[in-house]
Amino acid sequence: MKHLPTIARILLGLLFVFGGVTGLFELVEQPEVGEEAAAFMGAIMDTGYLWPVIKVTEIVCGVLLILGMFVPLALVVLAPVALNILLFHVFLEPSGLVFGLVLLVLGLYTAHQHRESFSGVLKRRA
Image 1 (cartoon, rainbow, N blue to C red):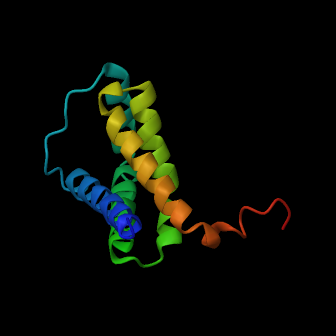
Image 2 (cartoon, rainbow, N blue to C red):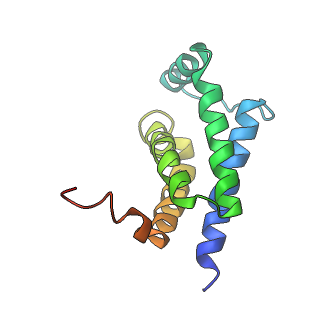
């Protein structure tokens, strides 16, 4: 059990690196999704910049998690990405809900392991 935080951090990093690389370079064929989900994904990709920014962010922060460097920063940067992945699957494409929940659980567990790093930003008054 003493290695569980390290395993969770590395697994979270690997999931983000894998998702970032496969999404950025279109290495795997995207599964069929519903009309609303396709419209949402199309809008992100049609901006021309947002999809690559998200995927590069996933790769960079995933590598940081794997290496154990700047872990609290990587978690803060990835939090809105993970939340959006979860909400995408909750509201638009329920078939990937388990993946979104896994990201959420691993992220929260890893953040809990680094909770001392977040103590300053969680104070009610500055």
